[in-house]
Length: 227
Image (cartoon, rainbow, N blue to C red; front, side):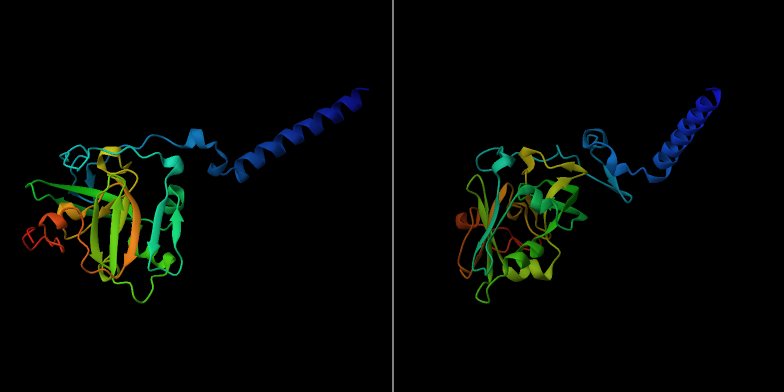
């Protein structure tokens, strides 16, 4: 009887040792429940030696005030002169290759902010939609009715992103959640927020919200913002 008990004890001991070895050598962080892995993001105020502005440093100057998007039914629609119109969900956009860069927004009101932006290249989204050869203009629309336009080539000649994070935190509603265009070398009115539609067009005469009110279509920082 004593011999059988010893055998059982040895077997149990070997089983425990085996389980410990498996836990040590085969554990992966991905096995941790998502609720434990995800910690709240913290805003960064310095990046590679460069001081960053606070995400609270913006002035509220949108045409209808902050917009609050229900992300559960949100779609980013890309349509018009395309061979493959697309409706992206928020998560589908975030699943694409992302990029980070520090870019300063200059407002025509005389203030500026320097932010670390994270997002996806606009041209990657456009490539998925397969622009037709007749497309030469990109018109971006926001949920509040705002719009602005760009030559299609602007997005292929430059690494322009639509951002979903700023200073390491998700863009808040007052800043443009879910997506804001980081329009490098352009005045702030070209940095459209709350983007929900991107139209590929051949209408080079289209004027966006402020462009139709006398602002320059190009919006170049080295030029006057008046048309």
